[in-house]
Length: 293
Image (cartoon, rainbow, N blue to C red):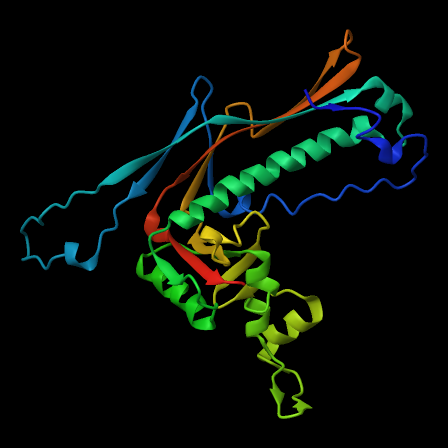
């Protein structure tokens, strides 16, 4: 048992801390971007439908007053199985009595934040499974790859809005989106004045971020792998909302509770996430692997 005792929680012991600061991760990125369904009570699975696209070739010219040839409307079932995702912290009484960090109040948010980070991690891993690709290992991200992702999603008939989910280095790195919007090249021995690509370049320069580009809403997650296969490549992706699905437990997504162990003189704080993730429609996503080394 990893017990939080007076040695591991020494930062606040014996002190009155006016403004305790907990450095939470950037989490809960993916949940609003995907299709979410809650399991019915008595079930630990959620089913999503992957409808087969009908095309213009399924529509035929007909002679007046004659019956049309029927076509089959088909769909595949995609099933997400709910599982538990758990983190526990056991905090001794001496820590609770002697800490100025208000450990009992901060433990729940800290654990809940970790579970939310795990949810993002599970979902961004699905981005690697999209069979459609842009860019590639050892290749720097270019604007043509962003537009190429848009082309593939539109060709698949994926409904908008579209999201481009990238790693921090794919956004702010020397080979990332921000770098694509600025030119600070050096000519000879003289620095060239910084140039920017229109309003998006201005936004990036002033705020350090660009929220949309080329028809995509842009998001970032620090759960995205930035060293895929130890090659220095980051595993971003583009998708429509219907590309990925999340099944949520019948009693909700998260639960945080505490349990008292009087004999051992500690309080256990337990956070649990109830979910199962699934790729619904492969054509509604594009794997954007790019060099960030």
